[in-house]
Length: 338
Image (cartoon, rainbow, N blue to C red; front, side, top):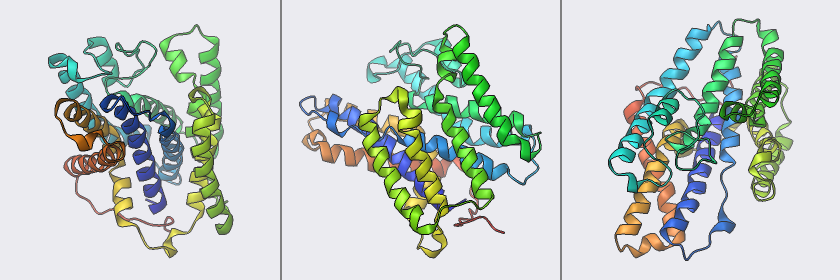
C-alpha cells in the first residue's frame, strides 16, 4: 500500500470525526455558536476518490474473479459494520433516549445490514442506515458490486465499461420515477469513485504530475476543499468538493514519498481509518452523554471537547482495528514494486 494513501485515509477519517464533533458540540454547549467551524464533511469525497484508485490499483494486472474480489471486500467491510449496526439497534431498542439520530425499526435495520438505501425513521429527509455515517458504505458496496461485474472484461475495456455503467446508472435513475433507490444512486457523487479509477489507470501508465507541481497542487487541492465546503452546497459536492479531492489524490500519488521519512503514527491511523470511521459515532455519543449528565466543566470547553473527540475516536478505532484485524505483515511502499 502506498504510504501517501494511508496518510490521506487518516486525514480523511479525522476530517469526518472533526465534522461530527462540531455537530455534537452544539448539543453539549448550546450557548456556543460553532457553525463557522463546521468543516470536514469533505473527507468523504476524499475517501470515494481513494476507493476508486485503490480498487483499480489492486486489480490491475492481476487475474481476479468477481467472487474473489467480493470475498475480500466483504471480509474487510461487513463484520465490523454489522457489529456496529446491531449494537446501535440494540441500544435504540433498550434505551432509545440515548440516541438522537437512530430509532429501532426492523425494516430499516434489515436494509442497513444489506447495505440498501432506506429512509431514516428519525429524520425522513435523510437516506441513512442505522449507523448514520454508514451511508457512505451503501455507496461503497454499490461501487464494489458494479466494479466486480466488470472484472471478467479485458483490462483495456474495463475503464470505458465503468464510464458507460456509471453514466447509464445516472441516466436511468433520473428517468425512472423518484424513489429512495433512484434518488440515492442517481446522485452524481458516484462519479468520484469513477474519477479515482481513472487516477489509478493514470498511475499505472506512469502519467503523473511533476514533483514540484504535485506539491503545489496538493496544497491548492486542500485549500479549495476547505474553501468550497463553505461556498458549495452538499448537493453540488460532486464537483465543488469532488474536484479538489481528485487533485489531492492525484497530487499525492505523484509525489515520491520514498525520499521522505515515514510518519508512523499517521500511517497507522490510515491503516485503522475504517475502524475509526465506523466507531467514532459511538465515541462522540458517549462524550455527549457524559457532558450532559455529569458536571464536567472541561467538556463544555469547545477546543478541549473537539480535541478529546479526535483523540478518543482515534484510540477506540485503533483498539477495534487491533481486535478485528488478523495480525499480518504490511508492506508499505511509496510506489508499487516493479
